[in-house]
Length: 377
Picture 1 (cartoon, rainbow, N blue to C red):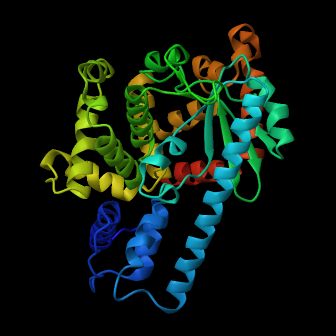
Picture 2: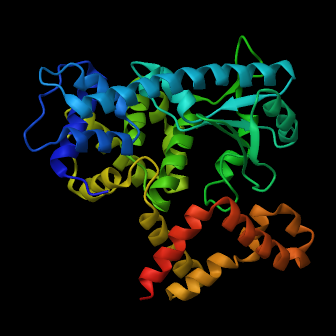
């Protein structure tokens, strides 16, 4: 997506106005309504932008107004459905004596001016890995279809079309992540809700660190958009003391996240307060603006190739493509845990993974093939 700087600057100005409930600036002539809407959707923050636009003297008209209002109505519907489904999932889990921890957007919604401003693509929950099999009949009883269950060592995926997707996680970070040590024992630090003992919650410090870990993971792998910086701003404003303790700072140092957090703080202050964007973070700001909410495929490919170069000495795109098809045993064990005991099954799991990719993720496979062919012309 080609992004005009005038459009991104104006979008950030509108977000700032919504956050502080101020009168937003009128649209400059250098910005087109269609480009503004597309950029807002690209970052999944169109509800906050819509709120600001609705207060302007000169608002969009005609087809673009119709499309924007239609998108707003759809977002409101999705928000209501997600809230109702979240209540049902937590309620049924608690009824069956299963502990459950809501993650990501569900925890951020209460911090926003309006819960509907914090948009979510899906619902995420952490459950005890020993109890995760019990969630299959639980989710099916609520009308969900298992889409990817038991095939990934990290999480299971359930869908209820047209709007609902739920990820049930066994762990917060996979063992292949450098800082997984901090989240491996998270259950020992979780608190219980006063009204519902089966509903678990993180301490503010743990959630802040998880926010940074999750943000950096997407940032490194392909990019993560403006919404993550909005989250950062709300965490800073709601919990200034809790996230600035000596313990948090020591953990940031141990994780090698001091500079990353500094970048997140500076962008949040520069965009949504009256801070000044530091020169060292201007490139990061541009990268985030161009990433969209989940990053781009090109950025992911670049990160993945550089990782294989560093870790395995692979120098060519052909070598990288071959390793992507036939992954090393350590990474295959993460996808297929039974390999840890039955290593002889590795060739069969390579074949299974290739077939599953073709039939279940053909869109992504086509993108990888297209990218590979382009690089090798």
